[in-house]
Image 1 (cartoon, rainbow, N blue to C red):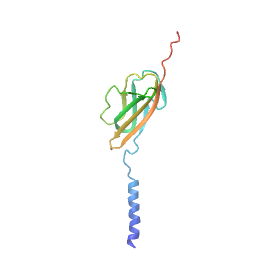
Image 2: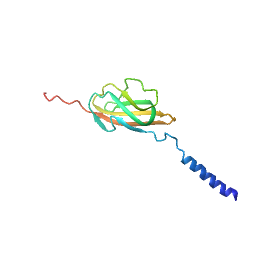
Image 3: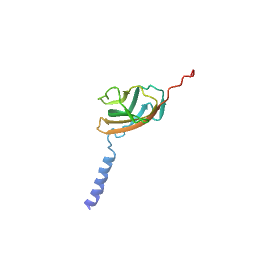
Length: 129
């Protein structure tokens, strides 16, 4: 009789304890980017920014020019510290479509990744021509 009541009760206590104790940063995510996902910007963009819901250390940051499959490298090393937002300097971007792919690690050890796309508009044509 004791055994039949103990196991369901113990199982319930363990299940509730596990369900009620998620890791503190389990829902880390990118909350914004500049340029924003799906946006179009003027030619000559020199900086890409990302903001996260919690401090993160970026481990990979790639910018792909989708029109010619080139990878644009940042002009400086990625920060080695945990930050809630990061500005990544790049050479001025030419007109075209771009995709940013990033990987990072949270202070709690969770590895996160994401992607967003934007485009750089063509340079305005000189009306005098």
